[in-house]
Image (cartoon, rainbow over all chains, first blue to last red; front, side, top):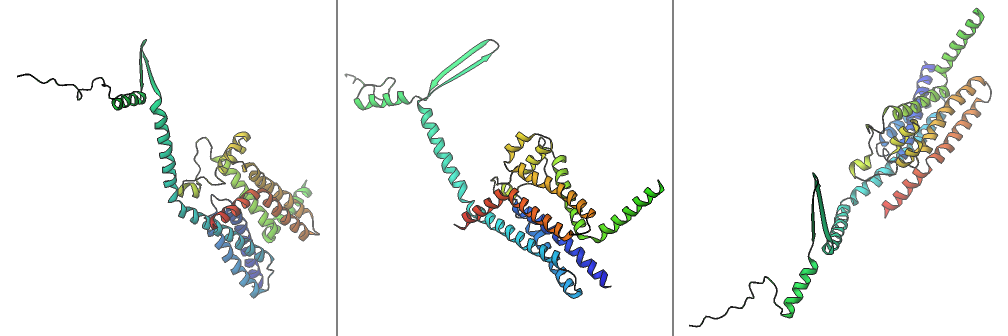
Length: 168
Length: 156
């Protein structure tokens, strides 16, 4: 009976140690570190049950103590990962705003650059070539505005056409 | 011939009994099995088809890649001999893979030494444990450092 108890303590120790080692390796890897808390708790439970059985049957407890220490450290590392994860998730709502502002700035910059640029589109199909050259017309608009400010007549300006009074 | 057969059967029965009773050998066999599973995982799942069942929690929830992202890809590429590509997926993939490979070799070698020796077995186990801890710390040092730095950053 005593031998059976000692054997079960031994098996519990082996199970706890292996689970603890696997948990430790998982806890250190950030991708899966968050879920390592589950096997970590299993390790602590196995080691604790083994310790209580070992104290009753006076079995050696070296493996159980080692697995308990490994399990506790692994769970601590895993909890630190959860803490980091939670803090990052808490800050996560601020990031899209920052990203949106960066995108908006970039968009404005691109549009500003594009205003002065000429756009050339070339289409080639069945030996026929079509080329369209255009620009955003910023220079033209500036010139038009300057003309208006200086009082010059703008071309195609129908509103400022002089209307001659009709003599009766 | 019959004497050799008898010796072999005796060795088998001894080995079987030893495996059933000895904790160190049991632990070594199981850990070697775990490493073999890791290697098989890297071999079965292909980096070209990207059919890995384990996904990064960080990337899935936060949409940000974490420090260990690309380890599975890196392992698979190392198993396939595409070392240069493996470095592009994760810089530390090679050293972690070498840790697992070294552990597999250590499990086999230490088990054989343990079986052939009858004296100083406890000393051998202590050497094995100490060596494994040192190798683990060296292989995973960048991960420990990163976790520590991230922890400090998250406290701010």
